[in-house]
Image (cartoon, rainbow, N blue to C red; front, side):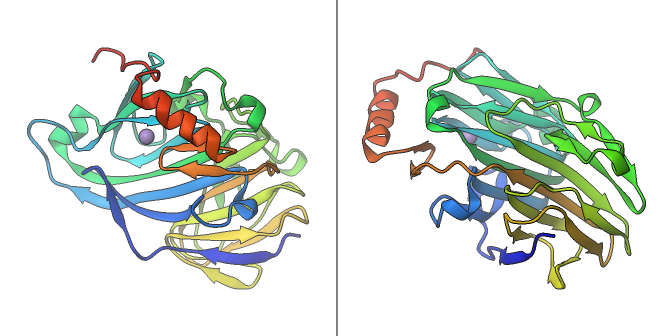
Length: 292
Ligand code: MN
């Protein structure tokens, strides 16, 4: 069994553009080895937006290079457009998996429809690192819709498998639709109050359980809303007890044992590569957004 190593939290929210009230529960600005292959976890919301006329709230054109952004929408809708020609709107229960790779420009706004109605908003943006050999892969975009995500039911809850695989035997097994560059599991797990579950997380992976709502007990310690339990890499499986109804995002990944050098929206291996990324961006080599 894995043990709980630390609980990550951040009580100082900030706004990303005017659309995303975010708590960064971990980021590459801190120690990167313990969280590898993950780089950053922004929990946006829960929030209630008033209807807006005119331009939707969000964040305008900006670059990324050297990693992937994974946006998981729980409430509300997010529209996206990028310089690889990717784009579209993702709604509740859907996921956008964008590979920035060699470089991409994109914008992230609330959808026009959601902007007009307003209402509850909740999403996660997770940054996943790329190994050095794949950092210059061409930018691409995976739109993962509700119907593509298999759901596994078990006593006291269910899990939607976005990436990787969930158990075999006892759970029947299910495989997520996301294509990843390194082995990653990403599961949207819902537990009913009192549920006790052994999550089939793999030995050797960086393993984190984000509590988006509710409260759970892991390895005898309480983990509450907007907190992430980081578990030991050693050991397979982790026992979770739901102290009330709980919404969890479980992420595991094989660590990438390479240097991380990041600056804002660029995450490379060395300072020289970051200087190159900034120069390329400034000289327009990231291309242009697809027409609206
Ligand atoms: Mn972005």
